[in-house]
Image (tube, rainbow, N blue to C red):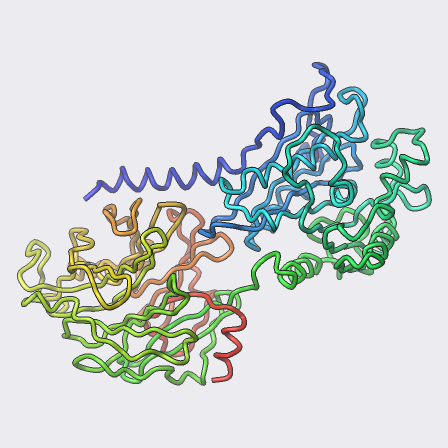
Length: 597
């Protein structure tokens, strides 16, 4: 057994390092094009009335600040963020980091672009400087798609105010050769323009942005070139525009004219004009405009730039498990409602007692749902069935995983996890073998003294020999494993020790799915008896649900780092009588079929 302090520290450090490292700015260029060396030109923060930095000015060295989503998808959509500030400053927090965090919550990797602010002091041709940076940012994401797990066909751009002008410039001038570049496309796949400056025409432009970008004496040709409503064509990417009618800085006509140009060229487009909000409202203040992030999310899902919002599912049993599988659903992971009027979806047919306790369901590599469950209090095997829709199930199978052990008293709370790398399933459960581990044997709890065992399979026909999976030095049960990042895994488990009293949940870590797992942590649950943990990551937070079985209700704890835990039991709601279940997700289409049952 690997020592707790060493492995947990190692794994948590890896997680923290990765999270922190991904937010470090990285240089956009090896050699900045169009640059004039000016050692007296130094970047600085603009401070608000309280002395806090709220914008960056005098930017001469462009960077990207990555905010990578913490999921296990091999390819994720990504968005480059262009903060606003009239081409004189960059509102890097309100229209940068905070936007990145919002995009992350949608499953989108975000990259805050600190683009060069146009200045004759640092650029040979200041008008093209920001566009050079935007084009290279898009190419950089595509160039590093494998490294950052990005989908090269779902690279978008979002811009605010003058950043919206840059985003629309990148969306209409992507073929313009403004520096010596490779053959990687600089065209964004979609754009989101938030109270954007679009036009350089005097009657509707934002004059500060115009002067900073084009100069005080811009030619008519230059004004037309960077009036992006006039540069739209059929290759301009799909766009959503957000603006407030009462915007006193950037007239709403900027968005309206761009939308009309998109419509004329049959480019997919959507526009939301709100009654109030003024200018620079970021993610929203007070009023109807606060709905714009939801409007963008819906637009992104409708156009399949991000996957549809999943439905959270919960498989559970009631009573003693006699009537079989129950299912509940949730849209947010907090309030759960039963399906089929809380009637069973599948009646148990195998095992000594024909029970269906502790149903664990996952979606496998074949796209099917695979379920294992406890069939009896005293049997030497577990139940198994599969389904393509959670409605119609295969013939139930009894898997005699402990039949070879004469002293095996039980096989309880089986769980199943799919290994993407080896294309196999690992099934693990708790068993007491009479005479094993005498150092923790007790007369308490009817003499049960569990350890965790496992087997592997690729087809649910042949199985590897059963082996000991986890021996923490105490009576352990109800293990469930989740992938954290890359090859880092966390196991949530129950310390079943009754004397001295434990009956709580703990965590252990490993850099391989099948172990070895570290010593168990301190309890992550409170001073109540807890069992049957099941975990999921919701918007960057790990939520662990569990059965407060002596209190006859469900509880939950939450963490962002798997180290510090907050009890959120008062925030969740489950159907009455819910017992030991498993959380997983399904698509909206799958859910609609289930609702009809």
